[in-house]
Image 1: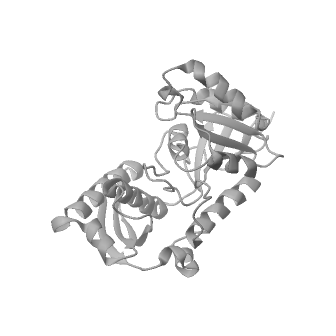
Image 2: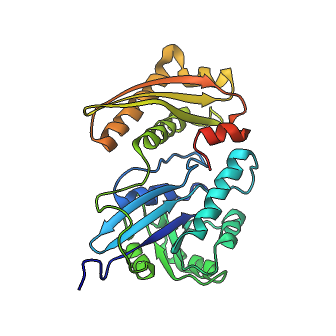
Length: 297
C-alpha cells in the first residue's frame, strides 16, 4: 500500500444569500479566522479558501460572497462572477440557510446551484430556534424544491454538529493526493489577510453610518524578523465618509487600527506595526480598473 492510497481531497463551495453565516461557518470549520464577518451584508467580496486536513482527508472550503440579486454595480457583478465560477470548480456544494428563514433571495441562489454536483443543505443558527419541532416542517418545505445529498442543522458560532457536517461531505471527495500541505489553513497570503481584517474592523466600528463602498489596500508589507510592518489605506467615496472614519480627534480610526492589529498579531503569531490612512477615491466600486487593482476578479 502506497502512502497516497486512501487519501481524499476536494473542493467544497459554501454558498447562500448574504448574512446567513457562511464566513462564520468557514472559520469554525477550520478553527481559524481567515474570512471576515460583520452584521453588514456583503462583507465577503472575494473567494476565500480555507483548508482543513483530518488524517487522510483534506477539505478545501471555498467561502463565496453572498449572491447579489438587487445591486448591479461593477463590484457586485464581480462578486456574482466569483460565486458562479466557484460552483463550476468544486466537488460538493454547501447551501447555507438560516433556520426558519427562506425567501426569494434564497430561492434565487438555490436555482443557481449545479444539478451535476452533490448539494448539502446546511441549516445554520439552529440553536436560536426555541421550538425545535418547527425545524422538521422547514426542512420538508426546502426539500420539496430539489434533492439534497444530505441535510445538516448546525450552529457554526457554537461549533455544534460541525463534525456531522464533515462526515456528510467526506464521501463526496475524490481519492487522490492532498492539494495543500498538512498545516496550511488558506491559500491567501498575509498581505490579503491583513487587508481583510482591517476592512472587517471598518465595518464593525462604523455601524450603518458608512456606506458599503469602502475598501482597503495594503501599500506596504515588510517582514523584519518576526515583526510585520504594514501601511494600509482605507478607500472611501467622499470626504464626509473620511471624516466619519477618522472620528473626533482621530479616535475612531485609532480604535479600528488597534483592533485590526490585535487580530493580525493573533493570526500571524507575531508583532505587527500597523499604520492606517484614509483616502478618498470617488467611484471606485464602479471602476473596472480600480477593482482590478484591488484584486477583484
